[in-house]
Image 1 (cartoon, rainbow, N blue to C red):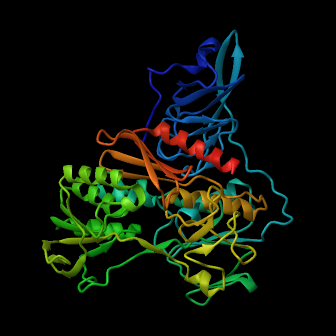
Image 2 (tube, helix red, strand yellow; image 1 turned 120 degrees about the vertical axis):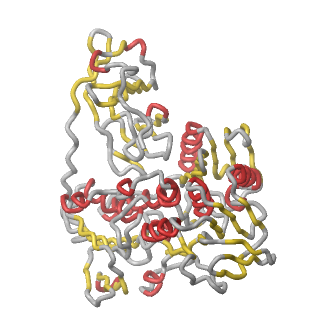
Image 3 (cartoon, helix red, strand yellow; image 1 turned 60 degrees about the horizontal axis):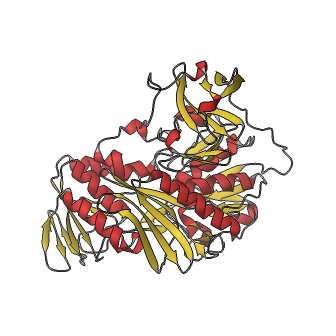
Length: 510
């Protein structure tokens, strides 16, 4: 997944670029030796950083400059131009930096600067250890951030998943479609955890939290003490309760094990029924069509994802899937599943070798509730992501936090939000008191169309569309009263970044 590389078509920045050719705000992609480098001018300052985002390799020259940061055009990671430090997920690594000098009216990029060492923290006041319960986005981001911030004490990650942290968004996209290799999935090599002294225990279930004793109890009865605790237990997929829902060809898609099991069943399958027109359901439908299966989607909605994206965009998504051969059965639910077919509430019978269920998820809040933590439709946290128990934080799908734009408490089930919360929670464990005020972001991929969405709009009273939905070139703004809550874009990466920055300014002014 690389969006750019050094090439002879890009200038050799070691030979220099005339300063008169570099306007304020200019980004010039070039190379120094074999390395792809981006030369950036901000007022009278010059910066040289890696030209590709460290997440999926997007060309940062197509991104957006905000102050002394650069934002990735694909998935909105943010980096510091001065140090290369990654400021926001989904990137987990920073950018390399090069020295730049002015010589004879030219900006000349010199040697690479050595990577910055983690800061030396004052041990006083730091938690004696950190335990992270969970193995997803928030968990890995927290663990990485703790070490990047220089935290010196033990970090233990307790995950019920059989696999170390992996790129879950890829499961319903390229990995399920067969266009991504399995070695793309792990977010870190095993050696990373050893080198950074992160104790990752996979297949480990936490049975109980004891906030009074600062300990968690595992399913085997053993206990692990903590100085600070992060709950990042994620969510579980909702399951059908109709007759036949427990048959072996009925699958959910949440974990890598789920996806591998589904892929194994596809070897002998030709016909698939997807239950639910959710993001996961429709991304899975697109991946299965890419594999050549016959796909039928069953959902009670009148229009796919209209409750999240509106009728117009929902209709565009439906038309795109239909153009690729997907057949929709809307206004219907499953009544029964047989070994080779499903029966709908309408009485229709559809042949099915595989049934994929994508009908939403429910947050895993039982540990928090049983420990007496405040919870209401999620684990209640303050703007620093701390729960009602001192020293206990929550992040990701379970966390319900105060939205700085509206003041309402919200819970968002998206990967990038979870990663960003994990990083903020980690910094706050170290005493930084950083409020979580990032604008929510997610992306959804359907064939060659990607939807980017910034903000959060559970309810809106009007939608404004700029551009051509049918041509997959548009921006869609969701308003409530005089407040723009969210913006979805198709084919307009820079517009999405600009909308995100505008929402950040709204938050700052609120």
